[in-house]
Image (cartoon, rainbow, N blue to C red; front, side, top):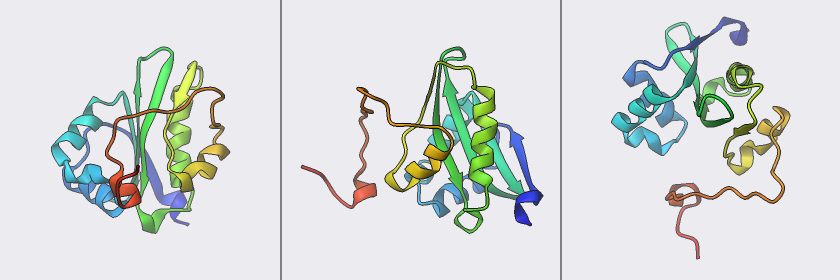
Length: 144
């Protein structure tokens, strides 16, 4: 089984071409800003990558103040490797490092909500996520 052959590594310096390919195959716009993407991953407090032999098949990262708050900003798994437990294992590695933190935060696209709920994430009461971001790529156009 492929899952048993996956190796998980904690490292922020990753091969540029493999990172860009992963983000491109997953349809993430960050692939269009490769220098900024690699700098963001390098500056992350934690990066967990998943490898099948020499192929980067998944990646997750965390940004944190080191004491109270952690934000999980990226979780990607190559489409051909999805639904095999790789994303769950990446998140397990990340969450184990920040288990005692006061806040663990992420933003989930609609179709990923059930996945994150299985990992213990819930909608907060009385708090709404807010951001400045051009999300026109996600819904095909501007909103009124």
